[in-house]
Length: 177
Image (cartoon, rainbow, N blue to C red; front, side):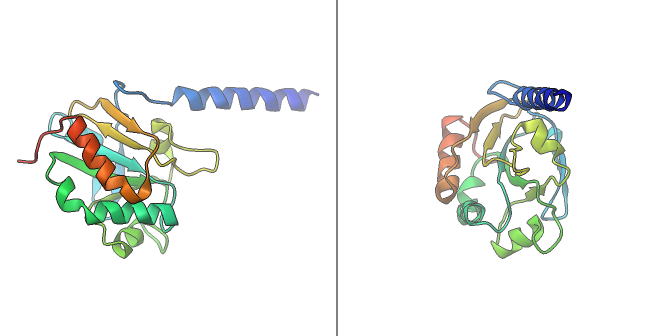
């Protein structure tokens, strides 16, 4: 009986921690420091006071939905760059390796950085880590002050770029200089 009680307590405490990590509009976005497919390290704090950031979490490189999302963003990069925004796709995949984000970015001709979070620390901070141990397909729109301006939890991979463009316009993100 004691084992069952302990297990139940662990499950309850774990569920509470997962709920506590849920972020909402108006919350400060957790800072991150992640290596990307282009070999550079990116920090959210680097953009504070300078420009908005879009962080598009995806479950797993080289899967059908993630490939569709990446293709959508890559095909519309010229339109997205018309906004004064830094945008990234991010997953808990490693950057390097045969199935890593660097290989994925190269295979899909992504013209934007793909962040890898293999420790899952940033995914956990953003509340996107699901029970399968991968990120939910959620996109965070972070204003230039570092606050979450919008969260899209219903991303449609095939139209992700068009939806992102519409959200950037709705949020009145300024044009790139």
